Image (tube, rainbow, N blue to C red):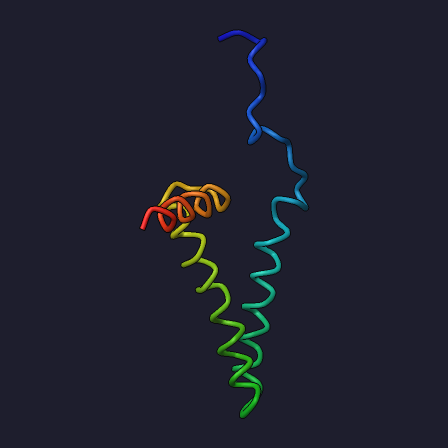
Amino acid sequence: MSSSAAPSPRSVQLSAWQVFRAPLLIGLVAAAGLSFGLFGDGVWDGLCWLGLSIPILLSLIYGARWKSGLEPAQRVQAEARGSGSK
């Protein structure tokens, strides 16, 4: 392997904050949802459902993207080519 190979765009070094920012935010939303469900009734139950459904929705969305193997930009291009040929 030669050292003159161009670095891949994915080899960018990220700080700890850049890596853990999204998971921390998702965890805080889920914890808030749990708190709303435990300590409140009425509107608080709705906020509980909302707070606990966000991590599930994000998992489904990003899991489907990961499973298809396409980046979001590639997916849009593939869909555009597919709809143009119909």
